Length: 378
Image (tube, rainbow, N blue to C red; front, side, top):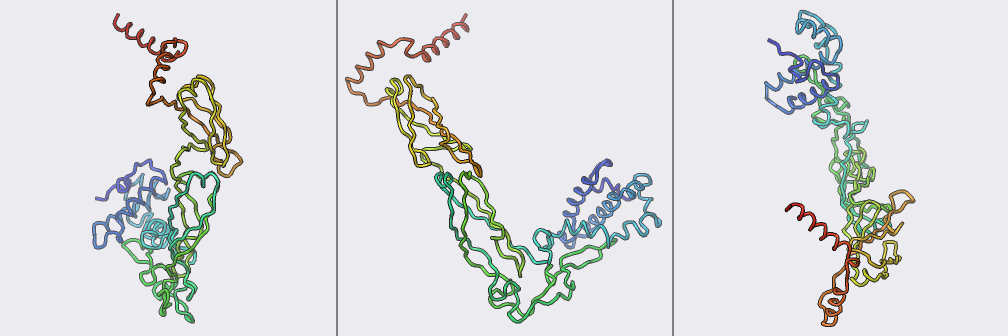
């Protein structure tokens, strides 16, 4: 007894075209004969899900199946001429090209229009300082990579010779093999999808069309760039095989922690300790900023710990704009240590003269706490 087609694909009868295709892709990838060599059960399963998808993706065939079931395709029904039996030269090869091309070495994303294999992308990790992030810079880096062979100019063939058209696939890079009810296109095993073979390879690159070499590149780091930013240099990755297009180089930037500043977007934060007397009596101090200047901060009388002062325009530049963030100075009050006898006497005298008005926060806090617990005990 034949299984229900919707059950084979693991979808509901209400599944739309997108859901059907997604389910088919997953199952076909799992059961494809190339991934399960010698597994007869996987091959049968592969054929079944292929037949199920071919029927259900076609509105007319799907309507016929929904009404009559498998009987709609028996005894020369819709399968005759336009049904599943004729799919070998049609829609199946297109979707198999899309799904299995990359798995079998012929991925569209890895090959150019002329069948040349694209070079691999490269990654380079670069660490910069916050000052370099602030001002921007032009950095020189050295990257080991594959470049086009200068002897054969990327063809892979010995100078004076040239690649010949593959006799197996006749230059297409693909071969078609029959599998039961339909045929499947695969990468040519002779030329590996290139459409050409080399009988007399270049002695320098051994037929690869590229050689390994360390290259020096100039990288522009724009002002305001943030930690974790990725810079892409198109075509600066590995050279492609036998004249294929080069991959890209991706530079991943990390910004080293700064001794004084912490960054949050375009704003900078700096914690500055001041003496207890400066906080009480008021005063001034200078801070150095990343633009190379100094800014004066005025501390008013009675400043509390945690107070922030904002210096407008002294933060980080906003990438590719004329805007600049701000610098926030957060005050920490340092309690005096290692007091002399005289200093202690003066502080004790000050404490005796202090009133609730001198310390409203602490006085108010303990008063509220007392009231709270007195209420609980009532």
